[in-house]
Image (cartoon, rainbow, N blue to C red; front, side):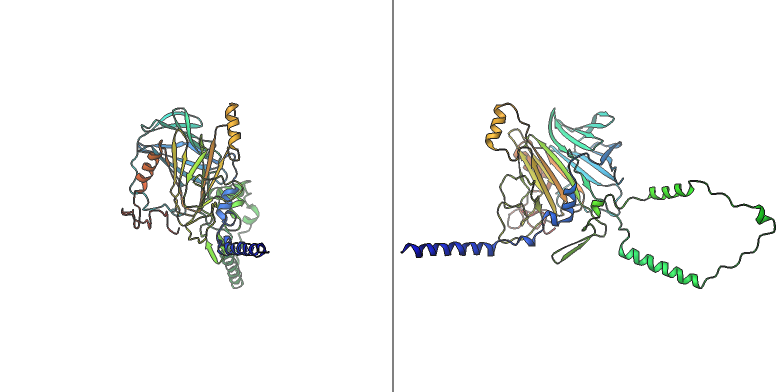
Length: 436
């Protein structure tokens, strides 16, 4: 009989524990998912395949320390500018921006401790659809393919990293909004004013033409195609403001989450780019998330979110954003370590996929014993709400080299209480950036 009260007591404790867990759990409805973030949803709607971007190889301009050429989106014809620099210390910098934006796009200041010192570049090969560049004395070469646009970084004959291999580059350009409510009101008011003026304006009668002249003079016939050619020339001068229907969905010009409304006077301006890491099965970094040290694949769920939030009672093993954001991702295997530093202060989502995801350890061992199986590869996709694409490839090859390369760019300040000075604009060394 004594066991019954003990069981009731244990059940009551379990019930109270469940109630407390539910009471103190994070309210997920207060934080955006990718589906609720219009730019993340648009970026993710771009599926792997043939990229619409083409590199105009004839526009290539090479200086001692940089290479510039134009990219064009063959769907909307908006030109972009690609700039590539080889950096001392075994690093490479890639920047992509609009060639002629309506206004300057935001570029992150105060994060780099100085302009990174560059190294020499040289064209070592070329054909009708590709260019080969040698990147300084590091032994790395870069093959740039024109159509579709992609870049492959090699050391010797080994492929180290690929840029835009799945064709997921997506760069939304600044634009004017057409057919807005204010435009329609202005047009209606103007039309009404024209009608009012016409009521009070009478056209003066024209003097009759001399007799015989009017009868003998025939109107000049219209030249076929004049109106059509004029219309075409007018259209060709206009840059399309609406490249595709996906960018005109709800949230492109204004979106609301809870009680906050975010207006976008120049329309959607997100940027996204993908990277492939052949030979790498494990990637790490992009803190801060309450998840495993090794980043998991995000297929079938939300990407990892970089957006500084003060989340109380956060969930474990979840890609949702937390207090800090450091856009540095590391890839490691037995041969080398690489880093990708995505210099963008806007809200960012990171998708990760792998061709070995879902395979058990026994399955991998079986592939190895049978001499089959494909080479492990991890694919990483960065998506930011605004700004430009500015990315540093930290080529290691050792883990200590990657951290040395990163700190050479951003400094070694630990921020408040760290005992070392921090670069201007950094609130705390372990949170990058603060409340973007």
